[in-house]
View 1 (cartoon, helix red, strand yellow):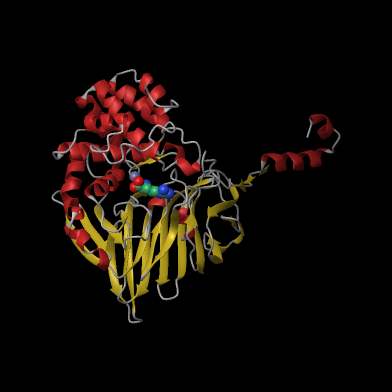
View 2: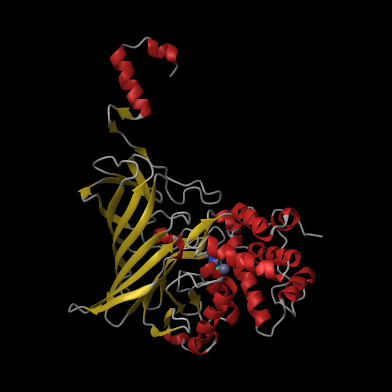
Length: 469
Ligand code: ARG
Ligand code: ZN
């Protein structure tokens, strides 16, 4: 409205109108709705604006016999603006009730957005507690690249994998990697089943009602796509790595040989990673091995990756490396995926180099020439697009993000030498520990840390189209 129009209104009406447009009446602050998405370049509706979550307490009850999930999510968050309403992401399931600060709240649902309108507006900076009661049969989602994600049922249970947006199929939340929080995930299952999640098992209680309650605790910040829950008849092994990281692995009985294979080297791999990348970022490690064929991929779920069938040593090293690169240092947006996958792939090259296999230089050359004798993936189309600019959401897990991403790191190593390169890898993990970072953060950091102008590498390998000459 123009001022000229305003001046024709009576003074009280002007005051009221001003109050409406500015959101202020005297000293009571009126909130505005929080944004329904964080404008991620690839998943614009993922996450929500106006608040940041500190903690999720998820209380889940799952019965593999009928596939019904009953959940209570208690979400403690801080308002970043005065809020009249805010959104949570949730796909499928029935919401039975929502409270904010203990008071009944109104809510409605459109698509994957659950909009919550608290009885009273929330003040900027206020820490508030939202409780969502929900139930239903969770439905998995198809990724833009065709992979399945979310709550996936198995022969005798289910497993949850969330990259990039599958976590909204099993709990309401701020489902974008830029909002990390600590978690307590409690899972109740019929007796005889195991329930596995991230972090440490605080308690395992056999109820008198024929059910077992597993209470899992993850104190370190976690992006919601890395949260997991697995229910089934698993064989559990526990232990400790030489440097004292707790180990808890659950292996589907059909995959039992997995524990004797490369997965048995996990403690040794954790020590190796510590030497290469700095202290392991979490209090525990392990694996969840679901029956082969359950998923078309593995996922670096925090502390405890999910494998579909017995993994190879390369894959265990890959998911372990993600604990530093992806889980501890998480991407600011889904465009930054090469910071996860390029690093995890390069970690495989380093492991092989350190254990009597081809050197990273040999791997790099194999990709240049397409020599599949050195690396069976060397003939993949790694040059299809620049790793820092996947064409669309269907490309964030495509070959160039992995292989050309690793090649970017090797180009830096060639340029600055081993000493500076390994200091860079460690420094990156240490300085952004439990945080978020973007590609621009990395390129700036790499130049500062190595004291070199690396613009040519960024232009040609990271952002350049076509095959580098
Ligand atoms: N981040 C996983 C890994 O490399 C792969 C996830 C694949 N997901 C997909 N939609 N293609 O360990
Ligand atoms: Zn990966």
